[in-house]
Amino acid sequence: MATEDRVLVLDFGSQTAQLIARRVREQHVFCQLVRHDLTADRIRELSPKGLILSGGPMSVYGEGSPQVDPEIFELGIPVLGICYGMQLACRSQGSDVAAGESREFGRAMCQVNIENPLFFGIPAETQVWMSHGDQVRDLSEHFNSIATTETCPHAAVQHKSKPIYGLQFHPEVTHTTLGGQLLRNFVRDICGCEGTWEISSLIEREIEQVRERVGNKRVICGLSGGVDSSVVAALLYRAIGSQLSCIFVDNGLLRKGEAEEVRREFGSHFKTDLHVVDARDRFLGELAGVSDPQVKRKIIGRVFIDVFKHEAKSIEDAHFLAQGTLYPDVIESGANPDGPAATIKSHHNVGGLPEELGFELIEPLRDFFKDEVRKMGAALGLPDQLVWRHPFPGPGLAVRCLGEITEEKLAILREADAILIEELHRANLYNEIRQAFAALLPIQSVGVMGDARTYEFPIVIRAVTTDDFMTADWYHMPYDVLQRISTRITNSVRGVNRVVYDCSSKPPSTIEWE
Ligand code: XMP
Image 1 (cartoon, rainbow, N blue to C red):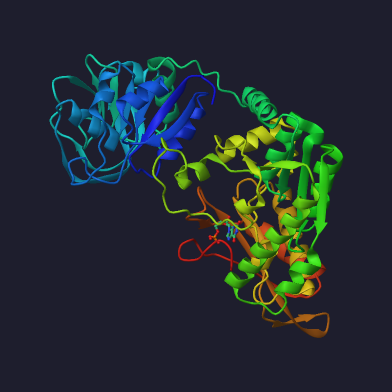
Image 2 (image 1 turned 60 degrees about the horizontal axis):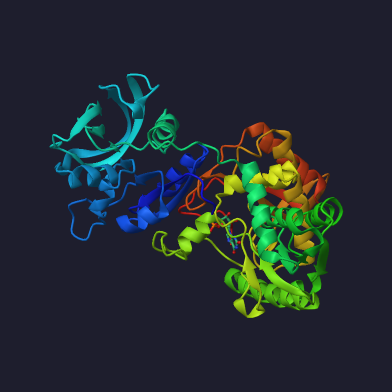
């Protein structure tokens, strides 16, 4: 990245460490997650304007608990410790940390006692979110206690002579009403970051970087119809125009109108060298008679790579392969030596292309979170419908058409799903829901239509809200909307005589049905 102001979050294993980085970026300051044990020397080299020590699941005094290089407090770079991070900072400066009377979890009212730059513009009493077992007990004489809650005498602290601050509560979660303001005060006023980090200027910079790297060579970009690959393609098109070739594999498992939409966007609107590969027969042929979900996934992954490879080889002068890798993927892969350690990879990756393809990788979204990528997409002129589209799994309708897949079932599912999505848009609910889709069950049940008995498939409607797709709540869909969806589907989709609503959370259920 270029040399603008940046703030580093030292990651002590908190579930909200990424959220801290996102919240700082919302203040137009570039922020990255780094490993907790980065040395003071390395930090000096990276020259951040500020450091934030994240929370963490352990006790700072526990055996094997992650520690920090104490020298970082001597660099003169402002430090904000959050929860575990505050306890580390205070302990390193001579304070004592011990278990509180009881674990404190949830909302609390915070009383600000001393005027200070961290709480500038924040009322004397404000709601915060606590989640901790330990707290700072004996605050050393080097600190002022600047805020308290009923159960926490040192809810916020400020070092008397060094630029070190600590918050026992979590400013990054939305339940801390003025958390954004607190982070802003820290990064903008205390650290002195200018706040010039803007999506539009980032796009220009990425474009420059791509041009420089690619020169006059050709880049291949695989399109999936989803947000990430679309933004990569739009960005590359702006950067290198006709040197970009896009490949879109129609696997016969797409939603209604999806292939046409890709053609419209990347063939007509952005006039890329678009290769739509019609591999429907190949995929459906290989999937015939297969009902095990994992076997389906494997077949789809294998065939996809095969088809993609074949098409890519036909583009003779291709040198680079563009991928829509996002910042959370980079963090989770542990690929960056300064970044936090790898965690267990939580997301699925069907269609990951193997190295044997022999291309050099280009990943223009590596520094960005999903919401930033959506903003880039909008700024690049992609339609809202695409930019705000719910996620769609790599194996597509194959994991929503339960059991054996047939063209007939897929056609039914496609129609039902299109009705669902249309009604959600019409009711203005689409953006409130994080993922919604229809699934088709491989059983038949009895119904009656006119005077005739029917024996047809049920359609399941699934709609969830979630922050990270690791856990999810079922969406409390208004009855009138459910009714419209159900009536339209049973009236107009032949082969369906029943609609059911899935009211299961994750866990114990998953979002997809297979
Ligand atoms: P689950 O069903 O595991 O889904 O609760 C969590 C998120 O992952 C998506 N998903 C997949 N994405 N390939 C993908 O690319 C897959 O095989 C796959 N399975 C689930 C799912 O749509 C949801 O967003």
